[in-house]
Length: 74
Image 1 (spheres, rainbow, N blue to C red):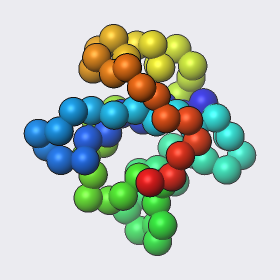
Image 2 (cartoon, rainbow, N blue to C red; image 1 turned 45 degrees about the vertical axis):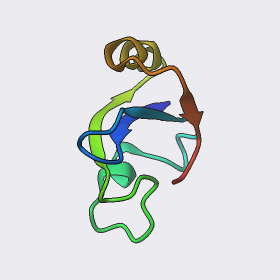
Image 3 (cartoon, one colour; image 1 turned 120 degrees about the vertical axis):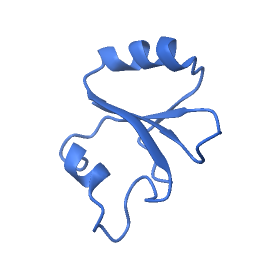
Image 4 (spheres, helix red, strand yellow; image 1 turned 90 degrees about the vertical axis):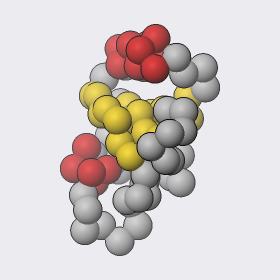
């Protein structure tokens, strides 16, 4: 599971998405700047990326996030 915390703008609230399919999604494919259709758009700000289920709870407490998106491409 790959957990990503991102912001759409610098002043917006952080949001979180968790990708559960490891064969389709890797950390490199999320942060790749040359990818044509990235899962998270290039103009959004990536705050943190973590690998593992424990990061969901950690990031929810750290950034005060209540809703988690699962396997969503924006």
